[in-house]
Length: 149
Image 1 (cartoon, one colour):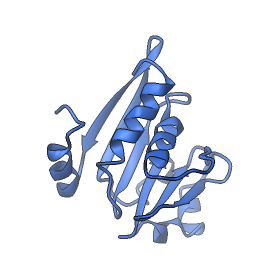
Image 2: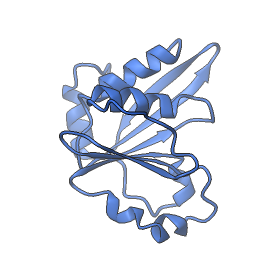
Image 3: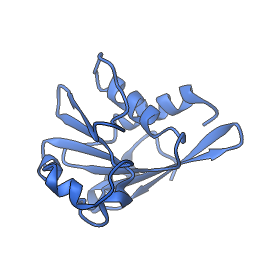
Image 4: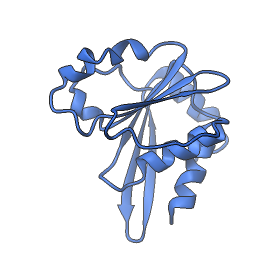
């Protein structure tokens, strides 16, 4: 992905793949484009408002026509129990798509992911790798028209 526009476009493509009830982990260093990817996804799902990083709030919620999207950024969490103390575990349910940046900060307290998306800096641009980790995730990725397997 050469630039921010390409990262936004990948997020938009993902809007046809991701389902309510799924958990998606986003992995990558600071500045790798995780929030930009979510911004492209949320906008493609019809959200017209501001899409911002949840770095300081830990979570941003988006009420979409088909489901609620919860975007977590756990970078600033110090203790994994903060995930439980905040009541976030209950947010990941059949009617919600949960996207989690920095999932390693919750050390095993998160639900298992359906997909993991890795974003890495590569020269002037970025690379993206998508791994399907659940049976449903693998099935959907295999039929997804926007994915090269």
